[in-house]
Image (cartoon, rainbow, N blue to C red; front, side, top):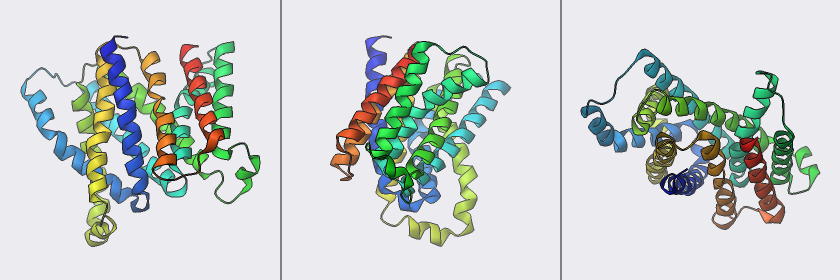
Length: 290
């Protein structure tokens, strides 16, 4: 991996944690907020996409269109799942669990579905991920799982992680194998989400705008930062960086997200949750290298 690709992934990690912090602040709004920041993203990045399309270097194929559509569907499910997680649990739980379970679920799927033989390093990585998630969720107090809502953050974080694993593979194939420009892939994915969520707005526009009162500035922030963080990662992949290195390096955002939850949102993070994040990062690195 070149230094430029390395810097792109590091920058993307900090931007990613930042927009998730904003999304957590807008958690009460729910799907309407997802629609709002998708609208902002479509409007903000349209000039860049139109410029790329005007160059005439993009060749659309049925396979390419299919992957763009699939990407949009998975990203929509991811956005809604993540926002729901932020409604019922803390950022410092949902965010690290979501970022960490993607590689874990990919490895389990390869073992159970594809019949791949697990390595000692891979099993150690799985164990570390499970331990890390446990520490993040409970802060070394296992009775936390028995409290009301004690498992909500883990459930929604794990579901989000599965969707992260899915769209990472789909989008990596789209940009590396099919040659779709990262900004074009992300923009059309956003556009599809916009139209799929539009009926939600049209059903009761007054109620939707009322729910967004006071949250538009957050939607603008997420709409600008969310595509940018992902475009930077896709750009690193396009430049030749291997997915096996990019995916685990992105997980440094887990630590950044946990620290933001502690410092900015005043969540009770503590040493056990930070230790869980560090163990989770170690497990993801082992999984990616196995």
